[in-house]
Image (cartoon, rainbow, N blue to C red; front, side, top):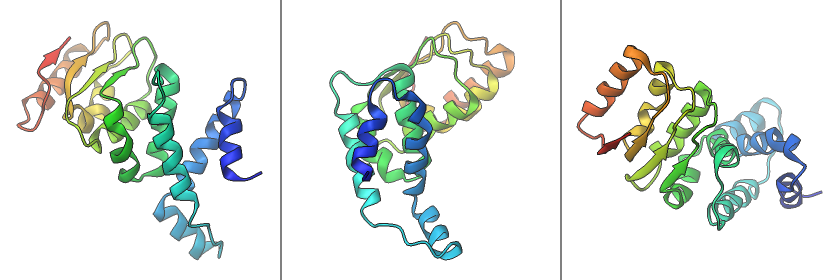
Length: 182
């Protein structure tokens, strides 16, 4: 089975157990990982993998209706695993509004979201993270991406004093674009 067919199979309903496989494949597309594999394991990787995965990322980003919730977050994980800013730059403009509300997020999920936002070509994302069980350490992880948001919805999270302090510090930065905080 070739890579394109494998990605198609992984996307089909009922194959959610293959989610980590897709993330792993995106991780293998990283130039650093490819160089390591070629040197350490004397394992040559195809130059066709990265363009194929970039094409897949662009196809996912163009879906109508766009992905939401955990499906969207999983797509962002794929972009993060590649550690290629080019992937995020090429697709994040399609996700001006990101709604991951009512999903419990881990610190890693927040780092993933921050990576994608940080490398976006637009700086007016609207992010809804209502009731995601966020605390101060989640806000710290989101910090690099918050700067590219104009709307930030954090309602029904228990940030506490430390979380609010972290958020205020981010919002005070000169290059922060947030103008609506809910």
